[in-house]
Length: 105
Image (cartoon, rainbow, N blue to C red; front, side, top):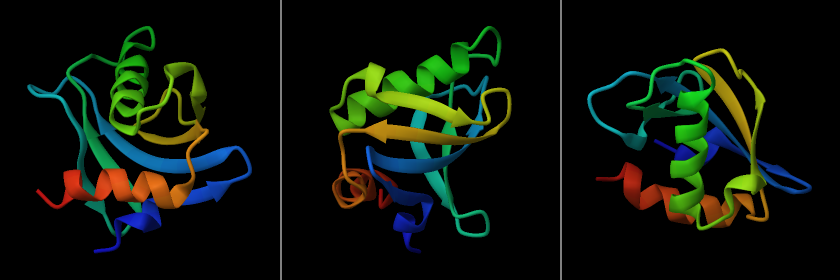
């Protein structure tokens, strides 16, 4: 599987496609890869209420990628399980290198 298909280059950094499952029993970002939708999967412990699940996804992704939370923005799917996140300040190739070991576990 080529996890890099879930990421696209962007002039400000990269875009990452996610499918999220809120209200899970455990937090896992990323938790897998969906080759059909070319997106990463994430399990979030927060419920999709008042943006809490989105905040948890942003916080965890920022921690993993080593970027500031303010540099990550949900640009599509704010109220959907399918999301596009713009991660500023990190190129696609660097993000793939960081995420790949987490997905190969």
